[in-house]
Image (cartoon, rainbow, N blue to C red; front, side, top):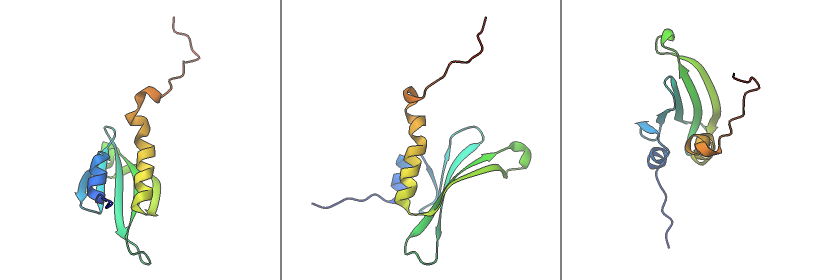
Length: 108
């Protein structure tokens, strides 16, 4: 029995990401101005490509530059990044699990 492994590109596409530069850049739009980004780089001391995972929010007033960047992982293995993405996007995929708490204000 052989173990079949998927390429990074295939795995990211299954998670809903668009492949920008194969094996290096992946993006997924999650809002009108928000993107999830995975970037790969060669890091000295590692044989494989190391990945960073972050959310970039763009404001049209900033001329195409991100107005906010939230870094979730930096220089990690692809398996760590994929696990983090699965955890991050799990609440998008399961809206019935999202709890909505009632407001303290009563509407009349």
